[in-house]
Structures are given as structure tokens and as C-alpha cells.
Length: 101
Image (cartoon, rainbow, N blue to C red; front, top):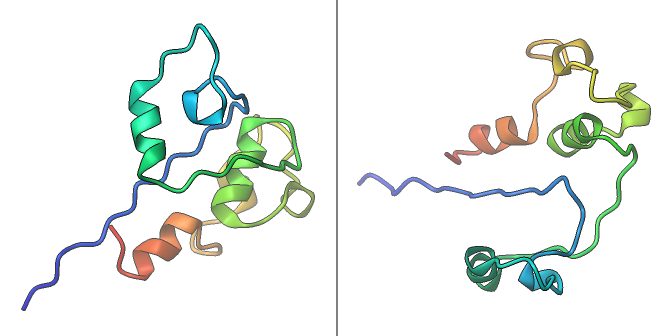
């Protein structure tokens, strides 16, 4: 018997603000699709970052290594320079190894 594939939809927003309805909204922001998604999903309303740039935050989220361990403090840092091929399994790689699509 073949089992049904398991899937995860993982959405992360790098721009920390409260403009969407589930986070309080803004009078000029109309977000009905995000409101519906928020009603059927898990929402985290607080976050902490170690570096105020997208790349180090994304690298940290996907590798579970803080920027003070990776040395990635800016958006110019390349993933391959920090994590040589096959030496670090990312969040996505761990999910794939566990059977997720």
C-alpha cells in the first residue's frame, strides 16, 4: 500500500511588521488571503534576530546556527562560503531526510 506524500508549507516573512490583519492590521492594508491562512495555521507573533539583515537571518533559520557562529553578518555573505557542500544539513534537508516533500 502506497502512503500519501506528506507536505509542509513553510512561509517566513523577513520584514517584521504588523500590517496584516492577524497581527493587528493597518488601515491601508487589505490582506484577506493572509487572514484566511492565519486562521488555519500556526502563527508566531514575536521574533528575535541576531543580525538585522535578510541573509544572516535566513541562514540562521535554515541551518540553526547563529550569525556569531557562522560569521554571516551581512547580505553579501554567500551560503557556500559558510556551509561547504555536504557538511551541513539544512532545515529543508532534514525534512527531506525524514520523508517530507
